[in-house]
Length: 497
Image 1 (cartoon, rainbow, N blue to C red):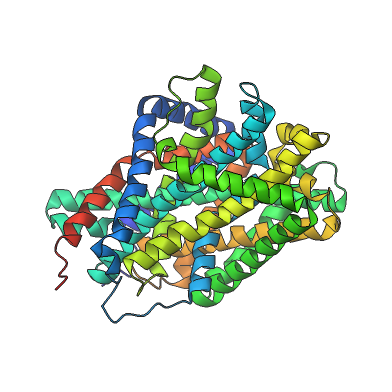
Image 2: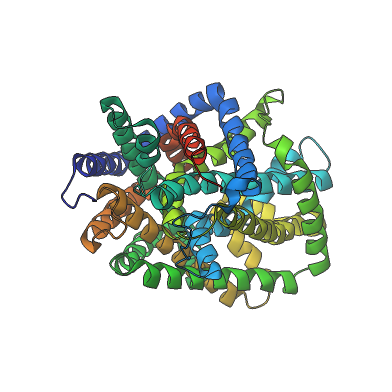
């Protein structure tokens, strides 16, 4: 039975998270600088292992989806899914990447384009820039989420354990004292990584929303409305944190996804449609046929500037997805009971990847169109302020007031859904695996996430924020392979007769 009283794990996790938040509030630049230095050291020495692991997880997902294990149901053989497939996909997608897509939709492809055009022609730089963006946000990212989520769901619903990262360990190895200690550390590391990782996305949402609101209201300095935007966001996620998961998350994530899809289709129709579709088809083909070998690239033999670029983006992303994997993994496991392994992996990996290809193909394609066939104003803005790139792009189209407002609302909802799902997940872990933790505990974690998010906002530099997130996830580079071994040990015991 889940432990209803405050446990040493919960108390320790709350103390560590609160300490990080206090450090960030009192000395934000110090926290960011130390994290950046530590992460740079790790990337220089273990970058090869991070890429090898990300690619390995993708191969694990492919194998499980197409093997006989794919028909195993996450739960009893007669279990049925709790949520409809569209609602399920919207919820996992909103929790996993929503705000990042709005923030980086045009900004990331343009950033890669500007870096790569120093070494090749502009058209080739655009093609490679889109490919790298797909690599960062596609199959590898969702394979990390999918495999971790599958492991958690399998042991929770098939093996009747808890929704904790420690469950596979104790189920496969036993209950020896050293195993219990290691399992406790697994859960503690999970909580800290979730809290820090989510707070970074909360800060990212604040940066983008304040820029958008400032533009709509004609405020010259977006920093003047940072506090009001942050407070409004905190108020907004308290209500769903205290509500039922299905009622709160499903409605918010569906609304956010509907706005995002509408915005994407509007730009596709209102923009140079043929140009964008040509780019998407070409980019999709290049990505599908090169994604597996590209997953083993480390940029080791390139010029120093390209090595720095690779570490700052692709390597940082892979560790970022690892940071988020316990949070997204536990959450999608919670909403995936009753689905087969094959259905789970296809839904978690393929559907969001295809959406990301369309999203970046449209937003990135519009950025390339401006850079290659117009005045290049977006690239100039992107160099100065990543937060403003999406809004500057929307200003080039009719109804920009409506589309900018829609982007602000979608970003707001994506952040709120992420905080709600993270608060739920943290409360569940802290209560020993209770699938329906108390609203009071969920609200406490909401407050901790708000404090951590405020610390990240004070850091101010999105690159430093990403380093802090990456530092919180370094341990998962070693934890996730252990979980995969535990999964295969358990799958060998399945009876297929």
